[in-house]
Image (cartoon, rainbow, N blue to C red; front, top):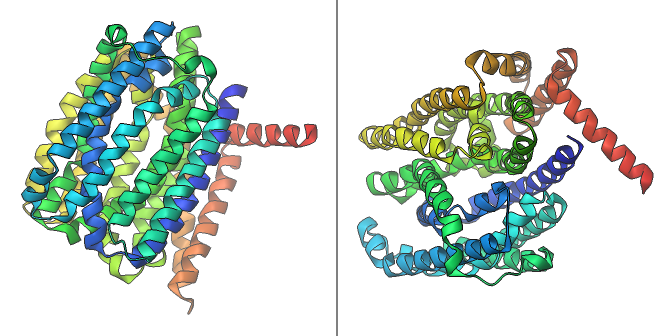
Length: 484
């Protein structure tokens, strides 16, 4: 647990600092770029997000979970990720004109020309980065991710200020990936410098095919709205929707990514030692994650208009009702956020694929029907999708590690109480603040402070498991400071 806590400390530290940079970056870019310009890049980014799964072909997760990782298997991993990435780069480059013609937007060609270079560079780094994750070297990962985020954000703002429009986001993405690759090449261990051998690909192929298929379906689910909204409602509407989803993803891509990045190797290492210990660790992970996610997304659902007005300005206010709906869906998805990592840690990658295959048609068909009406109906589809996903994941967790519904209720009951106290406090404070003459931009920080204080007091009073983790991290920091 001490090793996991240290890893989680560095992972959360990196994600929180990156989140601050990303938030400041988004606030500045929201005032330098229009919804249409954001929509153009967002559509290309969605295409690359789907292609990125096939680019990696599950190699990173294979390296993390493989019990007996030999040099031959690493050589096959390097060969497979290089082959798949370069094939995807060629495919995207050759199809860029067709993609642009379909949406009637010539600017998409220029963006894809730059973003395709990412796929050429990434095979040099992704296996090395996976090894750092496997060995739980999150202090090194902290340096790599934080500095590359800083490079990407500063590049985007500088180029946008100089008038590069949507291309500032494309060049910034390339700059961030290039810098990240350079640091990984510096930090990775010497024994990871292995020449790719295509003859060793069969070691990785079966796992990679299963994992990349399920991850590709999941990623398509998360990004299919980009393609539908861009075609049905235009680039400006896509930009507004992306801003709403981006607000949710500020948490999801940072806090959630930080936790799941540690969860994957931690679950795998625990499972290699004891299946019973994995159940205990998973229960605690669900409790800790939901007590953080539920109050946050409840706050966003209630105060989306004030948040968007403060962060992004008046031109983005139409995104507020969409953000509220998406925040409600995030309350559901937070319950099973650790489930995919647990299944993969136990080697049940086939079950994960089965779940993805069942969820995909529901979500894609739902998006298609909802797009006939309005963008808010598209957002509402997420609530249905994640509700079905929650049901399916718990069926498979019950079968594989005996995590039944009663365990889920017990794991989340404390989080529900903390959330209820936090949001009740928020509503009372909001009512009192609105009776004053304070500006909305002053009300929001006061709301946040009140909710944060209520959260902290409630986890102490209710003795929620997250309190133990906070105190353990605090003790480790004190010891580290004393040793220094």
